[in-house]
Image 1 (cartoon, rainbow, N blue to C red):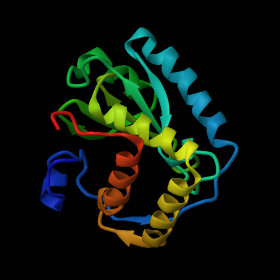
Image 2 (tube, helix red, strand yellow):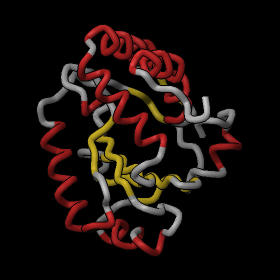
Image 3 (tube, rainbow, N blue to C red):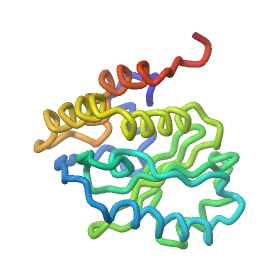
Length: 189
């Protein structure tokens, strides 16, 4: 979706159950989030074995001192996410629910409502994986960018969005600004 105009029609093409209205609420950083990630990482390692070429904690819950939606985001490097028979049945059997199906990316969810987890499956060397990790590491290292991002998120929170992807799109300009300071250049530029 990063290079496509965001519309409910476009979302309907990739969201397994279509757009879902969502109320975005932020929580102060919890010291439990890294522990919850570590537990899920261990479960994913048992479930996927060597098929998981990387398992990383991403998103705001991976950044100390940053307020976040209390949802653990994880990226898993799968050689070919489009080859669903190679891994998807095992994730579904472990309790994950497929939410997004788009080329080179699957997003699944587990743990609702107590402790939801978004699991993003991409090829390990995919540009989105590199961006997730660069952005996370920049926010961990730079207090000013961390504050800018949190202020942006707070200005967009405590209201309903037609789908979480619209909230994500609204954060896009500040994310791009922070990524540029972190040294991100889009491939081919």
